[in-house]
Amino acid sequence: MSSKPMTITVTNEIQRMLPPRVRRTAGFKSGDQLEVKAIRGIVTLINKPPAVPDDEYTPEQRRAIMAEIEEARKGPYHGPFKSGEEFAAYFKAYKRRRRSSSTKPQKSR
Image 1 (cartoon, rainbow, N blue to C red):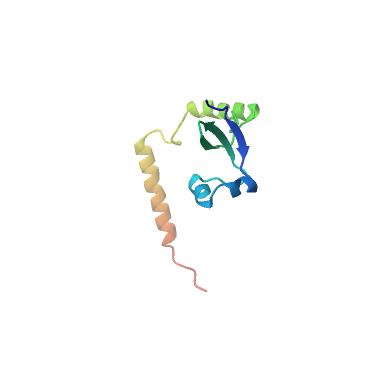
Image 2: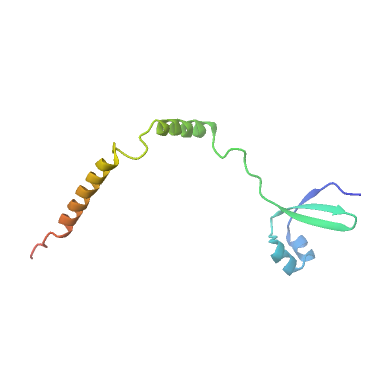
């Protein structure tokens, strides 16, 4: 005959009932929620993960996110460049500007 599962919270009192090695191996910590089942002399403790809300965003936040996603779908996805050649030309000019600015002679005092 099986019992209906019940939930308990790990407290100092419950921790004293379980050997330290068992607690460490199972990962039980104070405050954890455990589901307890008993079937024909076998007791099972299962660590229940904390409840996760259905949606972590408010409806207002969700609408704003969805609007941004729709705007992003319209493009452009990869910046202001119309082609790879246009990007390559921009990048070469950028490298030249950086190189010329780093080789400027220092002002004398």
